[in-house]
Each structure stands twice: as structure tokens, then as C-alpha cells.
Figure 1 (tube, rainbow, N blue to C red):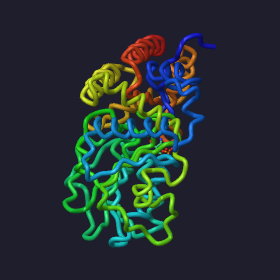
Figure 2: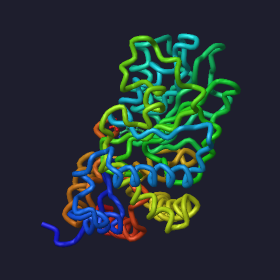
Figure 3: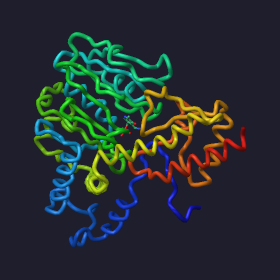
Figure 4: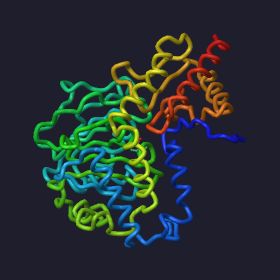
Length: 362
Ligand code: PMP
């Protein structure tokens, strides 16, 4: 039993900012004098449409989304986009290039294979996904409809430190676990997509930012809900969109804005991650899994080298309110997911506990 909030290091759904939760709670029963909760509103109501427009505008401003691109709020999480992307884009040449740097890019490529010929431009499995391929290592095919990569590998704790150059081939990026963590140049991408449950909102919503020039060429059997052109034409309202999640995203975006936007987030995230990585570099017991140059600012993976000790660590940490530190079953060890909403104090508490644990188990 905890009487106060824990530090939740879960990979997602994960922590939301306290200020956001408090604001949502204060508006739960009566949103802005409407006498109703946002959850209970028609998606076509004036009050909800105002929330929808404001959220879209906030996201457009925060990420500096150019007018060439449309923001879509879609159901089905990031995994639904694994299908939507080939269905909408692969028709151009019947082929696409995928870089595999972890579990989710592998799943994305596997799904895309159902719809066309998939060429693997890089695969980091040879070193258990502990590194990021360099630009020179990417093997592109001649006629790919698009190139897909995952900017941050949630399970393995690696993050691309550059944006791949693909010439005229549209760049498609899964940013589920690092969107809104730092500034990006949206104009470099054909499509950016992300599940909301890490840096944006509760689970169930995916945000897709699509270059409008790429829509309209979907395969004939594409389910209508997955057609980007339909969703653009209907402003994400072909059906009832995940309304409450969109409202929550709006609150999160206001929180980010008040913290100096994505420049502020990047600074905050670098400072936070440094606390843990610095300790991992000096510790005699704990060791970081990712190659230093590939380290993620969002998911930090580490081990003691002894599985029993790893399990004991996660278990003891849990009791202290340092929650969900057990690594993903594919990797083992530990993983601390430290998205935007994880405060610096959470990292300080984690490292203090790690030091205590190390002193006991040296
Ligand atoms: N891509 C990445 C990078 C992820 O971390 C996840 C979920 N952890 C997914 C895709 C799948 O997301 P969803 O559960 O929203 O389908």
C-alpha cells in the first residue's frame, strides 16, 4: 500500500505529469461549465470540437508541423500503424525497406510482408540490438516505396542519434517511445507515428503525422478506417475518435509548453538520463546494456550479470515505490523508462537505491 505516488518506471502506459492528472481530476465532473465530463461528450459537440482543434493546434505548434503534413488522431495504437503504413504506401512499387533495430521494428516489418516485398536495410540482432546502424551501413534497395525505422527501441534501450538520409524515398518513423522528448524536423519525414501511452496520453490513441502527398494510393482492400486519405478527409472522425485521450494529450501539450516546449523537454531528459548513466559507468555491480553512443534518453537497460540478483533488485525496488524496473522478457535484467513525466527526483531515488543495493551485494 502506498499513500503517496510511486515512481513508475514502466515502459508504457507510464507516468503522466501530476499537474495534468490534477487538472483532469478537477474537470472530471464538469468540464469548463458544460455540466458534463469530456468522456460523456459527443465527438461532434461544440465543446469537444473546441478541445479537438486546440489539441491539434498545440501539437502542430509544439512539433512545428508544416502545412504539407496532416495530424491524425487514430485508434489502435502504434501496432495498427504497422498495417496502415504498408497498406497506404507500398502500392507505389510493391516494395519497402525496413531497418530492424529491435522488437517493434521487427514486428512492423513482419506485418508489412503481408502486403509487399520487404527488404531489410539493416538488422542489429547480431549484437542483441545494443547498437544503432550508421548511415553507411544502411543497405537501401533501388525502388523502395518508403524506408521505415524505429527512432527509439523501447525494449533494448537504444535510440537513433541521427535521422537517416534516404534521398527521394519517404522516411517513415515509429516514434512511439521518444516523440515529444526533444525537437525534431517534421519536414524530413513522410510519416511519423506514435502510440500515445508513453509521452502523450493514455493508451489507445495513435498520433500519425502524414505528408498529404503520400495519401490516396492505398491498396484496394485497405480497410476504410486505415485509409489515410479517408482519415484526412474526415479530420480523424470517420468514426468516434478516442475523445478522452485527445483531451488528455491537449493537457500534456500545455504542460510541455509551460516547460519551455521541446527544448525544455530535451534539457530535462538529458539531465535525468545522465544521473543514471553516470552511475552505471562507475558502478562495479550494474552495467548498461546499450553501446554508449546508442543510449536512449527514454529507456535505460542494465544488468548485474546475475539473474537472481536482477530479480531481487526489481522486487526490493518495487517495495520502495520504484516500480516496474524488471526488464522486458526478451532481454531480462532491468529497464528504467524515464519519459518526459518522470521527475528528476525519480532518478535520484533510483540511483540512491542502486547504491544501497550495490553496497549490500558487492
Ligand atoms: N513501437 C514502439 C517503439 C513501442 O514501444 C510500442 C509499444 N511499447 C509499440 C510500437 C506498440 O505500440 P501499441 O501497443 O500502441 O500498439
